[in-house]
Length: 387
Image 1: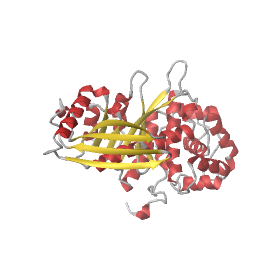
Image 2: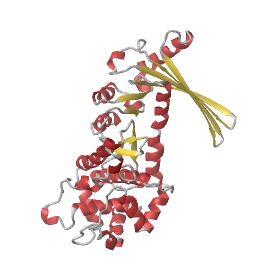
Image 3: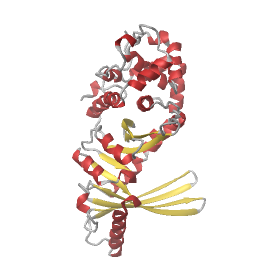
Image 4: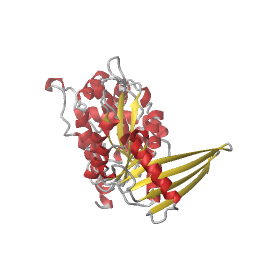
């Protein structure tokens, strides 16, 4: 895809985000469709960008910005009520809603190949009800592009181990390096990533007791003989700031002969260790962490991927909690909560792509105050086109 076919945000120019939602099946009976589904989705997206946290605020935005919205939308019966927004988003099947979102992401991937995908889970703590616990979502994040790639809800009676494969099925992993914390260190998940033409780095902790013990022993043996005759590599980093110093040393061994059942881990080529020292106010603590990987790469590649993995915490989860107050959102109907969560992730991607140097909070505030700025955010990806 040529540069001429990209927007200023680096996203494909040929189709807007909302065009990918036009194929979404309207869940309402025909005689109940007073408002167009496309209008409902666009109003909700605009409202969330401008700071709306729930359906009442989405509806309020629609009423307050009705004249502005009519430049882009049909609004045959005015702006919908909050009950309409809640009812429609609760009836939209989250998988279908996400499928539309995924098509937009895949179009971006054609233009901007994604090389590193971080996967991690997050609980929406206030989304529970008397009958159901809070919604827990596993999200995929393109670290370099700062782009949300998709999400999968964790079943109430299960955990992330079952949700991660479902999320992987939604993603294009071709050529990508996938990082997951210890919960995702499972043979079936490693198999899934390799089957979908990706590579993995999985953190190893006590949930894989024998694997952890064998990796530790392998490094102890390697250190004892000075790594003689072993294919290995080392990468070090030092950071200073905010009253602390941090030193990290990543070491990788490209052999698995000391691991019990190594052949059960599809594609496994590498075991690794990260030794870290952290000094704060003159007090030093140290920690060793371990990981496995399928890509035969340098310690620098592994070290940077593991550090960048936490971009999903800082650039996605932290933003959702602090700037979108996701933990305090009380939308409790499961489908509505999951679909609204996807809208927040889409919104965050659009805001982060907007080139101004303002914080996310200030961009949302500016979008609420200034319709021209909101239009700029949305026009960058072709969401709004004048009628």
